[in-house]
Image 1 (spheres, one colour):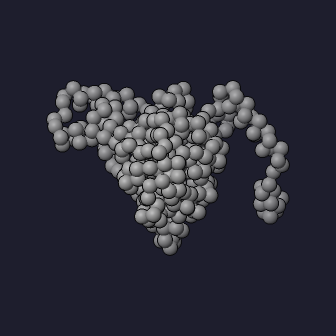
Image 2: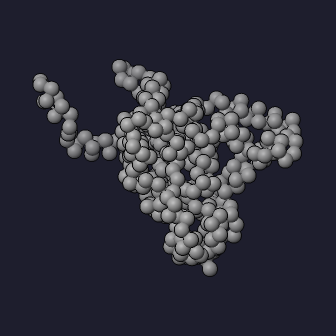
Image 3: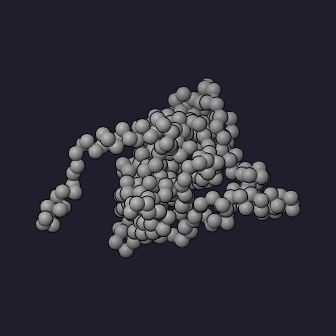
Length: 327
């Protein structure tokens, strides 16, 4: 067979394959053999397909300090307990925060003490509290979580994931079986610039293509954090009771670059931080700056909606709350 014939033969397959694969997937989910990765929040799971499906990309966008990192930290922190019996790993690309800082934030959530307290900045950390951290660490380090701290280019990112997936694969009856892996990226704009990239938008386009390629190749779920455009900070968008209060798809920085690749897009907002008392045209009453709104802007396999949460930043924990009253 010529090279041209070989190339042509790999470009298409019968629709029968897709229908059969879909039936196997549906049967597996019906029987409970195939499951999504459950998050700590019913509202999040309900908006998606009972959690985060494998082979998908979730993008979370928000202003600095809106709670993006806290959301990912809590998903990872509680993932092995909430998904007991499931065989998966976690690989975190932490370009912005030291692994040490992330660990102290996790101790903070467990002990219900502030980061400052654990660093003895507003009082002495007690020996009993430190022992509880030791005890927690002994249990937690048994979970298969790995971290990449050094910033890399998109091409290096792809190579790292290829190596990681191959390193943790098993071979049965001559077939390679890859371990399901949740991969988090703490900021889409913190990748190193490649010499062939003109600007950040070109880099984001390359990142989006890489994420789609990898999620189709391996049993991977990506969670990628992103920032918003400056447009969100226009004064008219922060006036009480306006539709402009809401996070929109177009607010995502380089929206076209990541949006088309995302299966789920969540916009995060803290209305009180922008001095908004009555949020959106419904005029939801915002009592304090702990109210956090998740706008599910794109749920390819779920339902678009907005949901309310309370962010206890000093304890590094997010909890569900009832929808606020309207004015």
